[in-house]
Image (cartoon, rainbow, N blue to C red; front, top):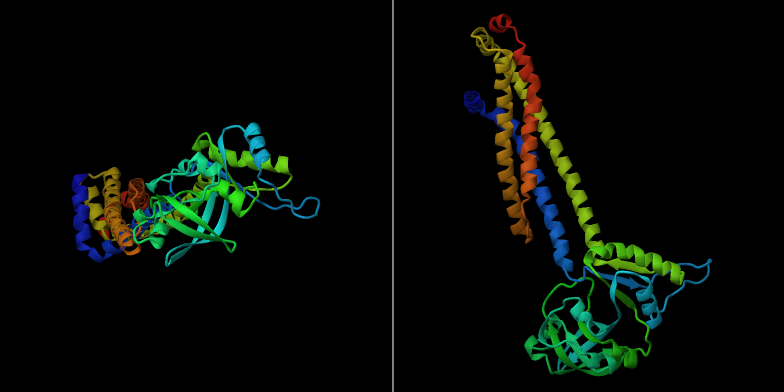
Length: 394
């Protein structure tokens, strides 16, 4: 077998152009599979990095609209009764949080910035694992008494102050609905990505309900599930519960569900594209079969001599199968190196974190070898069936 492999390499060296053309389809196919799977994995990771890993155990509920009997659309009031009823009737709920959002303008001396402000309850930021860089979180007193305290994200604090560390203890002005309020900065959050929370400034919901919009109803409800694994199931449970109890359709979403859907989409696209790339391997295999048929025709006398010297059909089949498999083995190695190199180039050019998939490398390589053996089998059997007298006479 080793002698057949060495002889195959010598044959490749004698017919470099033919060998290169045979290798090309295999190289392109293997490299394409590796690049596509690597970029698919990168896209999935990028989605996870964009949303972060916190908040996977949280399900959000917001207003949706549905016609009741063809009449006006129905809205639901997220008040304390809604919270209590949900907590009592839906299992696997750890806690329920209410939030309101508003667009504001924050100013400190000559600096100003537009901010998406979230009015949240005590413990909300901790629940979302939003880490404090400077200062502290809201206290129970801040929320219950509706104190004028505010927590800023790192970027917003840097926009208002020369240094984010200087923000704590400063008094800033907040303009909401053309009304100006004074707030004291008590904390600055670390620069981080946090789930579905898009606010850049946070104030106690107690203050919002008393001074900005004297209404205990919330705009969004956040349900913290007992475990992240149950959040996808909770989306369905809460959708059914809200529809049955309110008579209207509410928007129910979760980070976990969104990530699963996006991962499913990217994985499906990766599989489809990898399948297309695998077709090029099959095309390359057809090219290998054609080349091997030509090779058998050109080497009829050699086959006749080997048979005359005692070689049996099995030896002839083995010789040509090793030659065809050798082409795909070499092409597979070169394809893996090419795919890895292309992935690195894409990572540098697009500033993406790309991880080459080891399983993809192994599967594509094994598949390429299988292609070589499968498409080399027919020419090898043809060679083994040649009559030695006719082969020597040709």
